[in-house]
Amino acid sequence: MSEPRADVLVSVTITRLEERMLLQALRAAGLTARAVKPRHTTAFLNDGALAPRLVILRNLSHRELRGMSDRFEHAGVPTLNTPHAVRLCLSKDLQAFAFARAGVPHPETRIAFSADQVREQVEALGGDAVIKPVSGSWGRGVVRVTTPAELAAWSGGWEAVDPGERSFPVIVQEHVPKPGFNERVIVVGDRPVVAYRQVSQDLRTNTHLGGGIEPIPLSHRSAELCSRVVALFGPGFYGIDLVESAETGRLYVLEVNTNPEFAKSVPVHGVDIPALLARFVRSAIEEERAGRLTERKDMAA
Image (cartoon, rainbow, N blue to C red; front, side, top):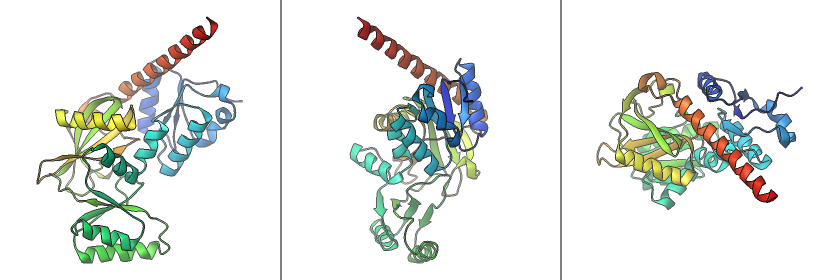
């Protein structure tokens, strides 16, 4: 027997602390909410009458997240984030194209479909570049090369595990010298709600990999960059990573994350991200209900 229709379903691979915090906040906001794995979505994907008002996408696997986003989109089920935003967030190459067209400051980024093209693009960027998978999280597969020997080692290792070059494309990105941290800004809806530094001397500053957290005030230029990102991606729930060049002081959007973690950062900066997200979701559902009611009245008039 299927469960009753919920206001909100949280689509998950596993239910982590983040999702438990979010479910608690949604229920405190007066919404019925529960977590669902892909196999639990059969009932409402096959019968739209059972569909929730909204699905919050929190799947860890990028392949799973992309697939569930597409299914909900074509089944007519609203999601947070939207399918457009998910597609951009899951593809670093698409983000780079979008930023370039919109004039959003972003490290110079090239796409490569083979090891030979990677070598060409690294050379075009002056021999010091960062190679990244187009889709990935937690810094997996991110490598900086600064010498021909390092590039040759990367190429040899990649060709050994991927002789058919099926893992391409990758992006080759200008290396921005950091002052020891990235800046992470959490956006809820269209509003930045908190900013903090992810501190590490490593190339990767992810808190999952041990990066430290230092709360900071949200600067005007960071807020302005975030507003430009929201204009491209649409309102939603994002972790926007910014990086300032230690040499020039220029601030760049490094990447936008569709599934930001917050369990480790909330106790440090003190901003109740789950509660803010729950309020945004409740507001969106109330607006959708009001719109449907107005539409019915107009049809009856």
